[in-house]
Length: 67
Image (cartoon, rainbow, N blue to C red; front, side, top):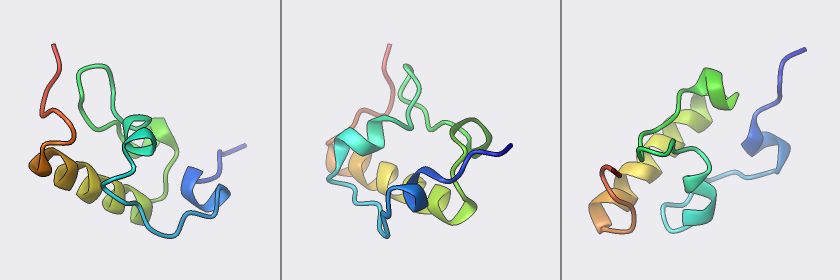
């Protein structure tokens, strides 16, 4: 049985870069983006998520790396 996409399950249409609590769920402890196989996110949502994470990093809301 496959897991359903987190975003479609919770009826989230758009991933916002300012929603840091949501975005941090999809980062590993080293602040890297987890793969869609591990998170069970659809390809469309994974692209939106990656874009939101990169925007948040650029704006200084998220670190590029964590040690």
